[in-house]
Image (cartoon, rainbow, N blue to C red; front, top):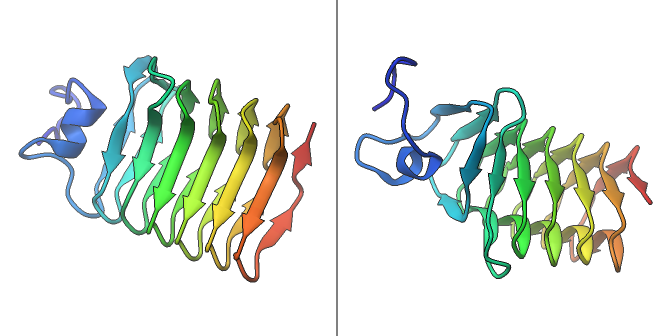
Amino acid sequence: AAEDPATPWRSISRALTGQGGLAEGDTLIVRAGTYEGGFLVDRPGVRLVGQGMPTIAVANPGTTVLRVGAERVVLEGLRLSGGLRGVLAQAASGLVLRDLEIAGHAQAGIEIEAASGALVERVSTEGGTHGLRAEEAPGLVVRGLRSDGPSANGIFLVASDDPVIDSNRVV
């Protein structure tokens, strides 16, 4: 494990998937720079927190930058670029997406499926079909989302009871 800042992991993927990688509830500080995306966050309670707004990008237009498949995951202070989606979260109740910049995606900047109690706060998306698409996401809170230039919807909700949609902007 890279518990010492003097010996960091060499990639985000290694921290998430390798032996001695992140465990439930751990925080990964992602330093400024550009990193290859296309990976899955599948450990509950893991936090990926950017320092200096690092970029996680994919070149393949059919790939999602970050997939989330665990509860209580936090993604904060990151720039996500390229691919089909910025974030795809499935069965990720308690998800927190905060202070993200998402651009260059073909479909949704953020797509949330079958996840209750998710929070999207101070996130910007640029382009794509939707800024945020959520299906079966009861109790979703979307606060301070800015969606620039989606071809269809800034915020698109399907079967998502009791959402809180506050102080958002679609341009």
